[in-house]
Amino acid sequence: MLLAVDIGNTNIHLGLWQGESWRLSWRARTVEDKMPDEYAVLVRNFFDSADVGYGAISGVIISSVVPPLTLAFTELSRRYLNHEPIIVNNQTHTGIKIAIDQPEQAGADRIVNTAAVHALYKTAAIVIDFGTATTFDVVSSQGAYLGGAIAPGISVAHDALVSRAAKLHKVDLVPPPDPIGKNTIHAMQSGVFWGYVGLIEGLVSRIKTSLAAQNNAKTIAGAGLVSRIKTPFATQNEKDVKVIATGGLAPIFDQHTDIIDIIAPELTLDGLRVIYELNKEKLKAN
Image (cartoon, rainbow, N blue to C red; front, side, top):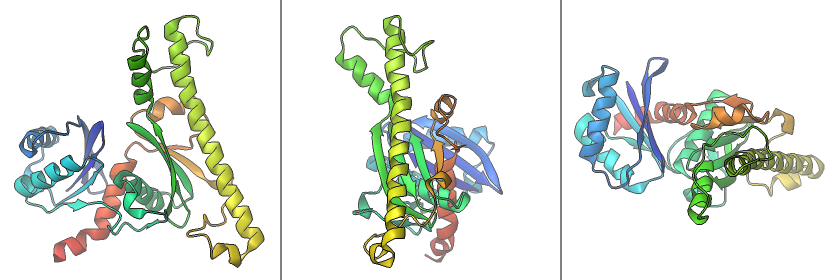
């Protein structure tokens, strides 16, 4: 049984993969200064809820954007599970190419999502991951991570607004009855929620336009231009580019925009599983 751990800035997502499916997935709050033993208690509770013992774990893989917790979960894996974990970074064998200017700056979560999309969907895609930040990652049909965009997450934007305006208070992050708010609560909900939908639709539109322009330039210039482009997007028409959304808020936004093609709630865990399969034989050899 594989334990996959995705450590984000707000939540830690754990999954137990058995056979052909996720037996259980679980989320815990990210607390940067927690000790390995403290997280071991949470992991033990997670295992108990699935009636799983430490001995059932055959491997561990970790994706993390919080360095102190990378160390904590590495120690946890070694001490409690007796496994050397795979820690995903730009040097890990993932089955994809990281085609950006500085590959070492690619976040582990973005690498993992790209690996999942390439392995599971075999298509050009824009991956929207709704987390502390909302990231837009562009994946070529050939399995290359081409870059993307990073925006503040809707909760971060909402909290920043409330913290800087004395008379504004927290509201539910849901659409109001009408985009024209008739009171302060509805006005805030309109600005935050519908403003965020506009951000999503606008960025996806601009990314697709950029991809179409690159494809057109490639077609016109032929091999001369291709040799100057690090990783072409291939020849897919922008209509063939799938928009895949993941993260806790993805289903909410999917109800209010037609820009999203696929909701993949376990996309990052699936990417970790894919990468583990690519590396487990090497891990055993070591």
